[in-house]
Structures are given as structure tokens and as C-alpha cells.
Image 1 (cartoon, rainbow, N blue to C red):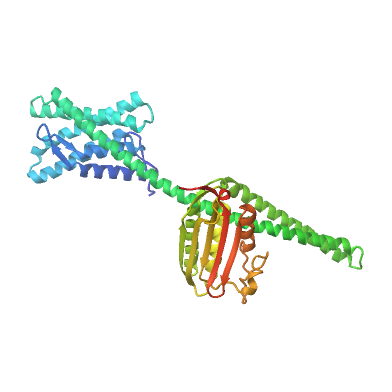
Image 2 (spheres, helix red, strand yellow):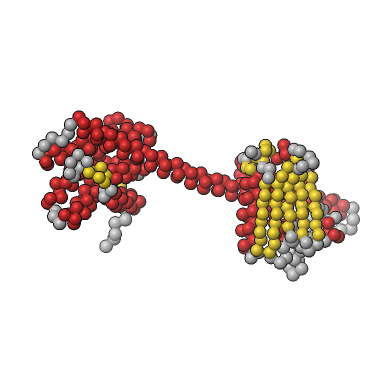
Length: 446
């Protein structure tokens, strides 16, 4: 026998999926429990209960459940739960039914008034301010309905002009509390969403800056590929004047063609990365302190994967609202990664400081200092040469080539019009100082 897995429908044709069923259960339990928080006024049994406030909040927040549906749930669960509690306390059932039964008419009237408002006045979605009016009249007329029901049960008229004003005041006060809670919940929700979006956006910017770094490397490779292609083609042309066989000449031509195709593939990838990731985000702004904080977190995550124990101190005395954070993110990432890789003992400290140059106002001074292995004197004069790397693995023969200090220097000098200085002492550490005109970075942040 197959189990029915489609949506459950109630008698009103409302589709009840698992999410809605959970919400119905939450409404039933919460409204029932909150009905115990109450106090008596006017006459015995007439209470001002927290359950009405809770129900009003659910009606506004659970838009996928009709408001009258929530009111009907409350009409069943809240009085029933209250009846059970009162019967246990009093030791009798019949005596407490008269106290609880009018509550049912309050919730039924509340739901009926809500339906009338939505069907004949609102006719669609409503704002929070308009919901205040709806909830007020639902509460007030529901209270009037309950008082009239109690008047019939007790055999005396309890509804007077003074009572009407009192009920209106209670409805206004309770609705104001509903409004306050909803505003607080919405504000907090928006705050959390904003924080989450901000974190996701920063990660996206960080990823885009990684792509830009890779694009720089690919653009450099394209130039090298083009040089190889040119050499192969030149050899092909020259081979006609020598005794080189036709087969060799064809191979040279084939090398030139294959290299040209590889160059085309590189250019397509570069174009895609620029169009999809880089160009769409290049105009976004970030604070310099945010860039460095983001790169600090990335570096610490990288250190954890390598089982390094690293302390990273970032101190920004003068902050800037960067015009385009991509290039500076690439610079900071590569300099901090270099510092991490220089720690042969797998532990150390990296200091990053940002301040305004004292001798040259209007110039931003950034220093990246580590206590790693340092750079040998014989390598200092070659460290900024293109293609030079000290990260050579003797076991595998692989050379790690990241963005490279020469490209970092090129970005600082040609993109920002600044300068880069390197000071290093073997076995003690390295300090790299960047000096960039502040107007090239962005506006100074307060």
C-alpha cells in the first residue's frame, strides 16, 4: 500500500506542507502557553492575556497562513489549555467552562473581523502601519464580543460606555506592543541579513581579487607564449634557406600554430574572468582596514591548513576608503603570504601597520614586517627581477611563482604612483615598506 506524499489539505482547501504544519504546531503551543500570562479585569473570567499579543505577531509574520486560520487555532488551543489548567486547580470542570467559554468567542470574532478587513478594505498585501489599524479593531471588537458573551452567561449587561473605552485602551496598548515586537524582530532580522550579505560580498571581492592576480600571471604568460610562437615561426621561415628537412619545417610550423591556439585559449579565459568577475566588482569600495582584516583572516586560515602557529597584528592608524580594492588586496595577500612562507620554523609574527607618512603629508605608509628567515644578501639584488623565485623545492624541482615581488612593485609604482622598499636580515626577518599617495588610494576615512 502506497503512502500518500502529496500536500495535505484542510476543509478550506489550504495546502498544508510540512513547514506550515510545523508553524501551526508552533502557533498552537505558543499561544496556549502564553494564555497563562494574564490578569483579571471587569469581572471574573475576563482576562487580559499575553496570548492575544503572541497571536497578533504570528498573524503578521506567518503570511503563508491566513490570519483567520491562526485565530481559529487560538480559539481552540488557548481556551482548551486554560480550561485544563483551571480544572486541575479548582478540581471541577463544569465550573470553569463558564469562565473559559467566552474566550472562544473573542478569538472567533477576532478572526471574523480580520477576514472582513482583508476581503473588503485591504484587498491584498498591507503595510505594518496599516496592520496596526487591523489588529486594533480585531482586538477591540473581539473584546466586545467576549464581554457580550459573558453578559449572557452571567445574566447581566457588562458592556457600558466606560467599558468600551477601557477595552479600546487595552486593544490599543496590546496592539502597540505587537507593533513594537514586530519592528524589533524585523530590524534584527535585517541586521543579521545585512551582516551575512556583507560577509558574502567581502568573500566575493576577495575571490575576484584572486582572479585578478591570476589574470596578471596569465597576461604575463601570454607575452611569453607569443615570444615562443614568434621564435618557432621565425625558425620555420629561416629553415627554407638551410638544409633542414621539410618534415622539420612542418613541425616548426605546427609548433607555431599550436602555440597560437594556446594563446587564444588564454585570452578567452582572461576575457571571461574580467567580464564576469572583475569588471562587475572593480568599482566597489572598501576600507583599507577591511581589506587588511580580510586578508588577515585568509592568512590565518592558510596557516591552520599548514599547521603553522602565526600571530598577525594589523594596526591601521590612518584609514582610507579605497577607490578599487582589488589591486591592494592582491598586494597585501602576496606580501603576507610571502611572510608566512618565510617562517621555516612554522611559527612567527607578522606586523602590518598603516599610517600617514610624517615627513610627507598626503602619503600613506604601509609596512609588512615578519620575523621569518629573511632574504640572503646575494638574492636582494635579484628579488625584484621577473621570474626570480627563492621558493625552489629540491625534491620535486618545482618553483613556486605567485604574483611575485616584481609585479607587486609594478602595481605600487605604475598603478598607484608610489614606491616599495625592502629591508631584510637573514634569520631575523624582512620589512617591506610601501609609500602611496593618499589621493591614489581613495578618500581618508574618519
